[in-house]
Image 1: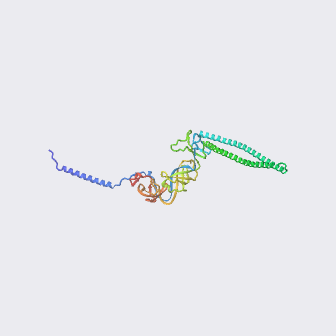
Image 2: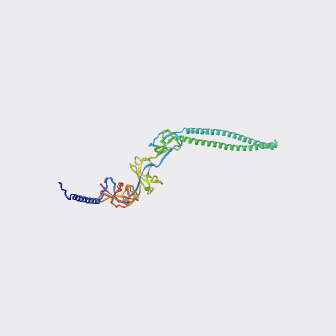
Image 3: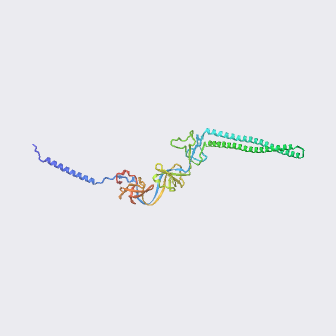
Amino acid sequence: MDIQRQGVRKRKLIRWLIAGAVLLTAAGAGAQWLRKLEPALPSVEAGTVWPDTVKRGPMLRQVHGLGSLVPEEVAWISANTEGRVEKIYVQPGTLVRPDTVIMELSNPTLIQNMVAAEYDLKQAEANLADLNVTLQSTTFDKQAVAAQVSSDLADARLAADRDQQLSKLGLIPELDVKLSQNKAKQLEFRNQLEEKRLGIIHQSVDAQLAAQRVKIDQFKAVYALKKQQVDQLRVRAGVAGMLQQLGNNAVGSPPLESGQNVVAGAILAKIAQQDKLKAQIRITETEAKDIALGQPASIDTRNGIIPGRVMRMDPAAVNGTVLVDVALTGALPPGARPDLSVDGTIDIERLNDVVYVGRPTAGQPNSTITLFRYGADGKTASRVTVKLGRASVNAIEVLGGLQVGDKVILSDMSAMDTHDKIKLN
């Protein structure tokens, strides 16, 4: 027979209570210890960041932009008349001279009009020759009549003088004298009329010949114009340079090919002078406000750097940028050609004594940003607020938040926006 032991259940309960109290005490102490620990810092590979040290001294303010080389003078060749492209002799990229034939057009109507104008001119010249002969013949007839009248007048005067002498001698009656004198007066009056008529005939001849010559000049001008238009069907370069394109190369426009019809005024070719180039670079609107004419610039062609000076600025901005023309003052390096992509840098001003640092990826002039500054151990970096001032291409002025000698991270750290301190491995 089993005998039940007294107090066992009570002792078990006491042991469980003691164990629970111990566990609660340990858990509380552990939680308190965990609360006292700092959170682990996010790590960043030191080799992946771009550091720089704050300096003091002179800083050259510059602005930078991308662009291309363009010719100072461009010749656009357009069609003077409509026509059909028969043959293209020269392709883009070829050096041409002023007399180089680029292409040949055809226009049968224009050729027909030139031939008709030539025949009109020859007909007018023939009419002038015929009119000249006719007028000369008429003039000769009038001169003969005038000469006859002049001869009759001379005879009448002699007869009147004779009759007057005979009348004085009483050999003829006075009436015959008066008749002779009257005849002489009539012929004298007629002679005066013939002389005036002869003068008028000369004026009429000159006027008719001048009118016909005017017609000839008119036909010559028409023929010369038609002939010039026909000659222009052989499209020549007109200037020395490089043929850059055929047609206008506008969006949606088909390339210029043989067999294509072109209208008057259509762009046929573009020719650029190879030895007279300038750089066109685009500068952001915020930086372009400090650019002035004559400022020095340097143009990087990837095969050499060409010095230059600002020669022109567009008055308006397009898509947030301003187009700046730079005149090249140095020799062109090998390979320089129109439409070559280049990098342009313009010197704005030299600041003699400023605190500056390399330009951060998000650093804009006259703004306030945050940067990570290296700690004394060089293994951690803390976020600090930095006030920036005037900027250059690769450097920017520091107005506050950093001291000379501070080392900061310039690369993009947006991934750490939620952290004020990082660890550099």
